[in-house]
Image 1: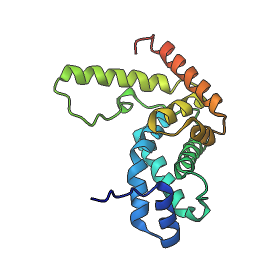
Image 2: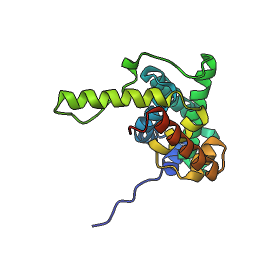
Image 3: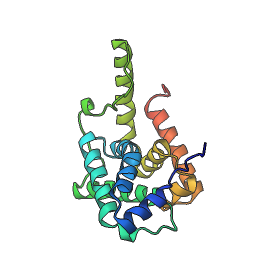
Image 4: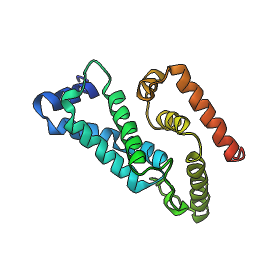
Length: 187
């Protein structure tokens, strides 16, 4: 039986640009939506704002599809758009970071948990991590969120952040140290 070759992101984007293939666009959307939401949530601290950023990111991909350079990786282009959209949102709202009540800072957990106590412990831990994440410098937060949410190489992350791969590694290391300090080494 012949193995079906998976279509690359760049091929999907080419199909979308050349043929206005909506299915190709939808495949890219569903492939990256969750990771971009997690990244934007960590960036803004708000589920509603994260959804707004992801929506706007894909609108920009749709609107500016002809500006995509297929010599570059689609993933890097998409993450750059998302990062810049997060920055635009923060600039528009003139906030260094967005504060919400801790009730809104809990990540959703997809798998069911049998014990209410386990749910409470996980929820409390997530609240503490998210609150600490919002206090570290933005450059460290960006690098850490990219590292946590997608399989970009350090070169790819460097392209998104306009940093060298070594600078990205340093930012991630400093972000981890800052989180560990803020969380009292409890994680």
